[in-house]
Length: 167
Image (tube, rainbow, N blue to C red; front, side):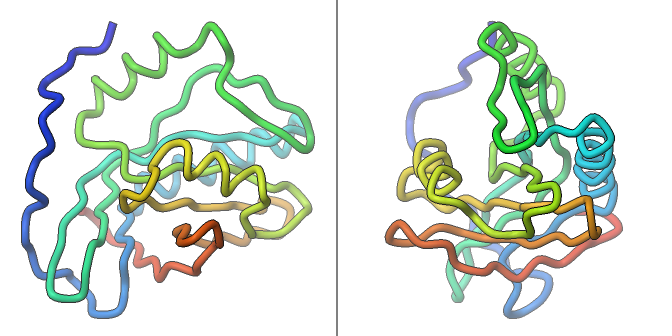
C-alpha cells in the first residue's frame, strides 16, 4: 500500500529553469530506461507505458518539470493499445514509493505509428493530470523517434525537452 504523505496542496517551488524555452528536463538515465522499455516492447510486438517521476517547478516563464526516473509495472498491451494491468497497481505504487518524487508525466510507445497523442492518449493524459502541468513522451522504436507533449484545451502541444546528465 502506498504511503500518503499529505493530501494538502503544496506551493510549487520557484526556481529558474536550466535552459530558457525548454519545459521538460529529462535525465539521460531515465530516458535510457524509457527507450529500453520501448525497444523491448517493440521486440515483443506490443506498446508499452510508464510514469515519469521528478519535480515540477515554476519560474517567470511558467511551469516546467525535471524527470529523475521512470517507473512501470505489468501491462496489458498489444500492438495498438496499452494500460496498466488490473492486478499491477500495488507493484506500480511500490515502484513509485521506491523512486520518490512526484508523477510529472507519462511515457508510452507507438511502434510504427509515429510520435503523436491520439484521442485516447489525450483522454488518458487529462485523466492523470486534469488541468495540472503534466508531460507525455511518445517513443516510436521502429525509427528511434521521441517527442514530448503537454495537453491544453484537449489538444496536444509540443513541449521542448532537454536531456541532461543529471537532474
